[in-house]
Image (cartoon, rainbow, N blue to C red):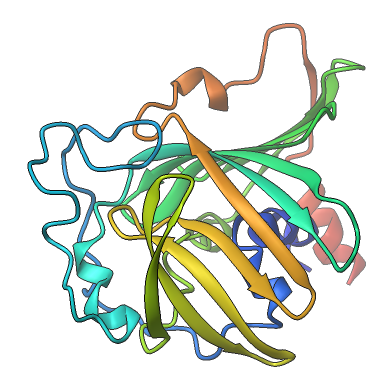
Length: 248
């Protein structure tokens, strides 16, 4: 059993909630050089056109038919804070997780997750191969090493997009110009709204409900987001993996 399978699974679902809403988005794309590395631009907090851009989305193909037509045009942020708001059926919208990410290319290098108004905090530092989990109410928690393959299996917000998903339109979400993309899942069809410039998902709809993704601090997340505050007592669980392996 992977040492942090359940925890990382929750983070991945929160980060790419559309996978759960739609029962999977079809075939996952193979590794490819299609997505370019992040570009050095000044990205405003609302995810709109970079500062100094003369024509909004001027570099986006106008006649895009599938995501493969636009993947290479994303100016992927180096960091961002994402908040997820979920709704299901007739249930009222519920604030979900707040997730801060520092990226290394298209994969997360560091990630912090906390529930809205909750005391539980999870930090994954793939660069240091370490996970931290603590409670701000009790000031207690633990740290745990990640195996090399676990650290490499980091969430990738753009990595699960199906390049053959059909682009069916263009629409603004909270002032951000988005591609409207149809996806096919195990439980039925769904839609995603993906920012044309940064490739970040703004909304997802599926048979089981919908989720809205809002962003702040694009390209401007402070390193302190991924540091454990002073006063938190961390138990060292370096031997936990060996204990789990011995128990199997």
